[in-house]
Image 1 (spheres, rainbow, N blue to C red):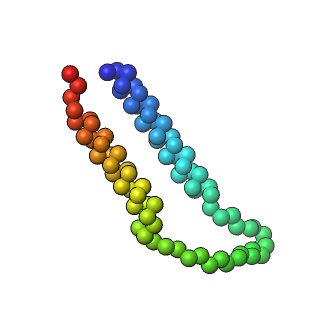
Image 2: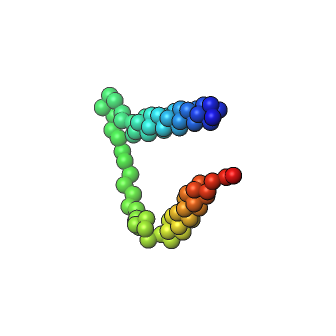
Image 3: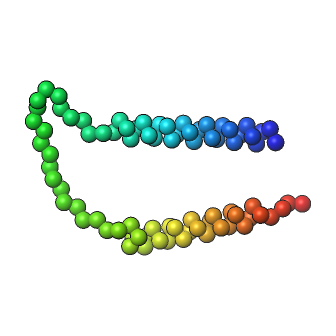
Length: 81
């Protein structure tokens, strides 16, 4: 039992580290601005977007994920003798 608790604490620490590193990467990935009065030119691009729920791949992926979660929950309810 001590091994399982030790493993869980290490996994939680690892996940916290990954979350912290991910947020710091997002914070530093901002657009840089020029200092010293330099002119900045930007190009405008037009993009067309579609709603995520109209893409069938998201629906199929969500259904597969839901089936896996239900199977894991149903399997964890069994008691081993």
